[in-house]
Length: 403
Ligand code: PLP
Image 1 (cartoon, rainbow, N blue to C red):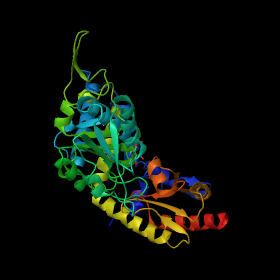
Image 2 (image 1 turned 90 degrees about the horizontal axis):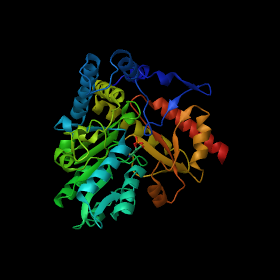
Image 3 (image 1 turned 180 degrees about the vertical axis):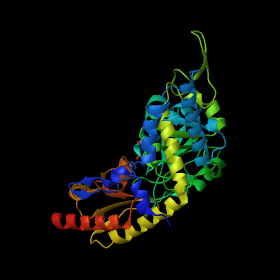
């Protein structure tokens, strides 16, 4: 059993009053709040070891470089990767997907080749492929959904042909809060010798991830959704793919030697980390993952799943409630009657309750559902059932005002 009250004390922002009421922060799928140890780490790095990494022979540079590379090892261990060189630091999920789309396509795809994505993808797993469609004539095939908003796996099987070069799908939907059968998806793709990119933005904070067990070819996530600072993220890639792929950005750090006639690239992971990395963010990401380890990701997952079950149960007591999909992770999307979700969000904000409303950067899914958007409550380890009760009272009040 987790002591949630003790955990809450580690998050300074949770003491905030919003319109004179205690903050009820249920927008964790957008970004999580940060524990004090992560906030302190940022200040500590600037106060005690700030120096550009990898380049200096001097003491501070070596201390900062060691701390950054220790974080790479923490990330490797956290996601069960085989080698540290398979961990590339990026700005987040979006940059990681853009990196793979760009570098993979440049190396392995030609006009007419196909990528498979799904109806429930976040825009950041749609638009990078559309850019390739425009620039390089690559085709996008889309996995449809079943009636209960699950991926239609039979239809997915039928999307493969000799032109399919990569599959790129979300592990957990940021709108529906449902988990896709990612192992099966990967197995099916591998039977066609096609690699799979897993968008782990919404799974990494809520599930034990082992990229080797999943046999994922690429796994991407953002630090800020797992208690780390904004602006730092990860691309895991199997070494065989990363070694073969062209670099994404060019610049310092990613080269072995440069002359005007020929440049040779650095080894992994540096080949994909051009320029000064966000070493402060990287070190703080390592600290955040250590913090998660100290609580235990399985403990976090079971607490959040319990909150999700409770939220679904309580939401369903509100007349006219519609919950979309089958949430099993840490987010629930809903509408009440024909009330616009933004109206609910705005009214309950005055009660100190933060939820997200709108299309959640997944417009094709929202169009598929034929709705203007949803209201989404999403949970983290510091949330409580009492906060869900406050949410339910808030929604009931908003519905009363708006009906
Ligand atoms: N993919 C999914 C499933 C997401 O939920 C998000 C963010 O909400 C992203 C990608 C993009 O993440 P970021 O904006 O941190 O790059």
